[in-house]
Image 1: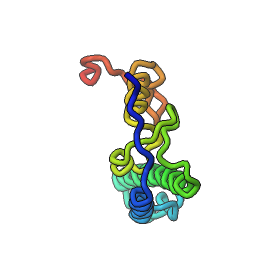
Image 2 (image 1 turned 45 degrees about the vertical axis):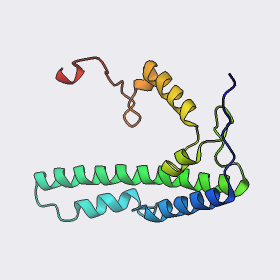
Image 3 (image 1 turned 180 degrees about the vertical axis):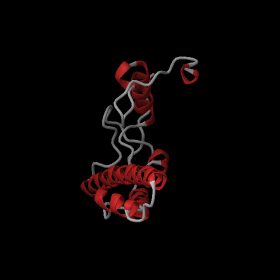
Image 4 (image 1 turned 60 degrees about the horizontal axis):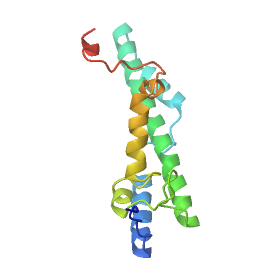
Length: 149
C-alpha cells in the first residue's frame, strides 16, 4: 500500500501560519537585543559578599542560557518565514512530503514531518552521540539507576 501524500497547504493555512510565526517572533523576551555582557554587568553590580556573587553568577548564567535559546529559536523563525515567502515552507527536509498543517500549527518551525522526526529521534536515542548533552557535550547515562550514582 502506497503512503498517503499530504495535501499542499492552502493560502488561508499559509497566512495563518505566517501570522503565528510573526506572533512567536514578537513574543520573544530577549530577541537578540541583550548581549552577554549586559547580563554579567547587571548581575554583578550590587554584590556585597561571596554568596551574593555566587547567586548573581548563577542567575546570570541561566539568563544567558535562556537568551541563547531564544536567539536560536529566533533564527528558526526567520528561516521559516523566508521559506514561507519563497514557497518552500512546509516540506519535510528528509522525505520531501508536505508536513501536515496541524503539526505546523503546533510547531511552526518544524522542518520534518512527524514520521521522519520520530525516526530521527529513535536513531538519536540509540546512537552514542545522540545521548550527548547538546550544551555540555558530555555523555548522558541513560541506564537504569544512573541518577542514583
